[in-house]
Length: 149
Image 1 (spheres, rainbow, N blue to C red):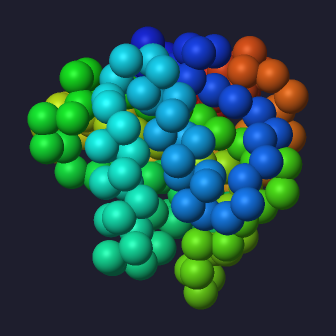
Image 2 (image 1 turned 60 degrees about the horizontal axis):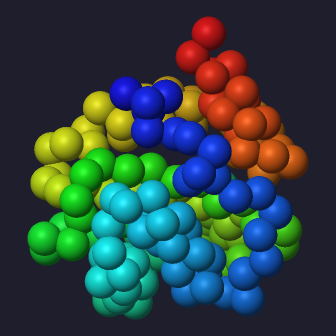
């Protein structure tokens, strides 16, 4: 499932972001460019974090921005954005963030399998540091694949 969604088109490495909003917008732009959602979904990701706080920061160094779909997601998608310099989301324990894994799905149940696979990756304490230093989208894909072997 995850492997089918993760293509070089939805991965960018060592991107500069001025703050967490900029990072989330850049992650959302990857999903938009892949035809998975429109710009209102990206705006919803930002506004959800503004409203509910840094709930998307799940582990040290990683955030998983997402939002509720309101007809603005055409199909399930995932993107990975690594940052050249980490940004702060305001999380007491897990800031700063260097890897963003953006997700979208037309309905909440569709992305549960993907989330289960991502949870396996987070079980490996080296996962995020390994992803953070990947130089190319192909490196990210190879690193992700290594967690399932």
